[in-house]
Length: 372
Image 1 (spheres, rainbow, N blue to C red):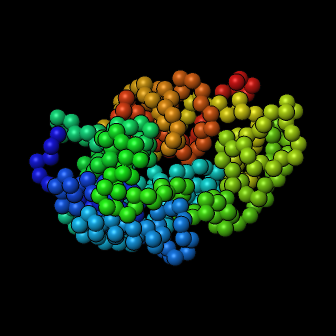
Image 2 (cartoon, one colour):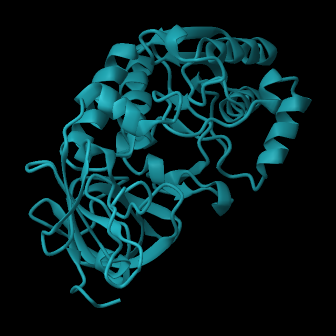
Image 3 (tube, rainbow, N blue to C red):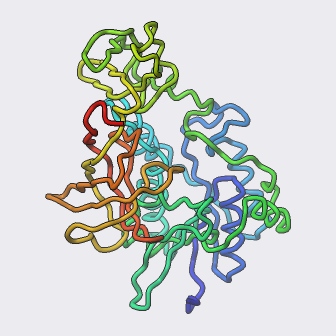
């Protein structure tokens, strides 16, 4: 539905093509747009030129140039302290505890739609606009729902599953309802004279410029040698820090002895308490159920058990589940066993294309050993 009046919109501009086109579309739609680049690194000079993240000095310049072309005011806001506490330190602590976090979800929850949104509302803005591919649909009764982007291939609703009612009421995603390929978004940027049209997409974790997560964690947590064992507890090798592994990992295990059946082995469990990594066959990764904590709902919390589809990683497919809220935790049962589910990851529930909410996986129930 058409909005009755133009909104005062704060457009988060990372310096990339998506956020630049989103800001341009918001301005073209008649909204009063101000661009803001979030400085998230305390010393962006230390991030090498061409880093694949979104916090380099060049990124803030690219964002400023895009704002100039669109013809909107532009500011750089320093949220480096909040980012360090809420995203980077959380990331390190989660790995140290043997879990596998998703820092992009944490950033959307704590930075873009908490710290940034709160500041925007305090300054009299109506909404925050980002270049995420997702849709906010306003129902006839005025309530809002978060839905997948119309183009499933680019859908980013998974990393927005942490947004609640109040945050959705102030969120604009101008790219979500158009079925456009990335090439078309780039062509649109070029048409609009935005220099970021040819800029490569950012990948990996923005605060780990070289993509070496293990090296980053080692520099923060130090080396801590421990054992790699099989399911019976027999020692197969050693490692330099359990935090360097994720559930389902196959490469880089550095185990000298091959498995008796000759098949590859995978990380089944990471125990930070005794600094042990357990490995075993792929079949032992099959998970039939899980418990997730800290649920956040994009609307009313569901009541009673329900059938949903679930997504377990940012670029993963959907799987059918039954889920129920029990004493504040989400109990989830899979219709078919799934593999590579790790505590710390987010599970996002969908009803069709609608995002119901998300929660953090705390524990998994494995299929019995030996069942494929």
